[in-house]
Length: 285
Image (tube, helix red, strand yellow):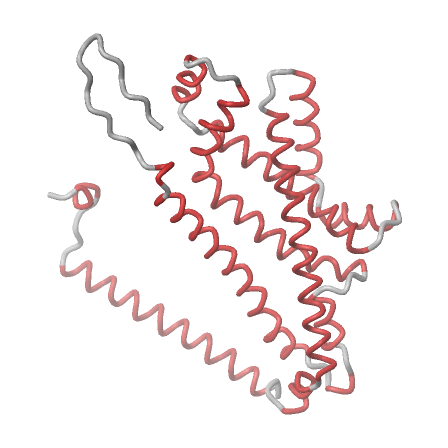
């Protein structure tokens, strides 16, 4: 009996038939839902030439491309700064000095609990900051605080014996973190890090509320144009797949990095032959 079969009972003929019926029924329901949505779109004239005509004009295309570029710019800045802030706060929370640990915990809990939209509006209105810096600052404070908890949890998830063995070898705390704990924690942290970066990417759409000309702001300008019979649904059908595609690209990148780490010689186990009593083990390079 294989390990997989030992974990659960192999479904019998009746169970497999029932599962097959469930699959067919689910497929029929999903196809029916899609057909109903298409019917509503055609019934409300969402595929008429008038509503899709704006996308033929070069000015509209440049507006969308400029908005997409601004979205990627805000996301890139927020992602880099969030990772840096998260690392700094995580180090503070793992510090042996109580004042540093308490201060870092206070900052993390405050900005993690604060709605990101409130922070963006406060920075933009109260501090009179330009739209792009206000958006990036709000995203950085929120996502950096969340990532700090991800980093701290990832480091603490490494087996305690690894830390103790490293200290027993005479390594300093910085060396233990850099060479022992963090490399092992990266694999566990990577899915959560990418998930939070996806959240940051989607939250860049909040920039349109403070007049930042990002992708959603460009779509809003097109959708509210009376000359094209308010093409709201066509704009959504154009913008949504692009947002979804960018999020899927981030997820693919995370999977690629994970597979690369697994194939890396630095992460492969090293087999050491048992030594005779009184002999020294060979040094692992």
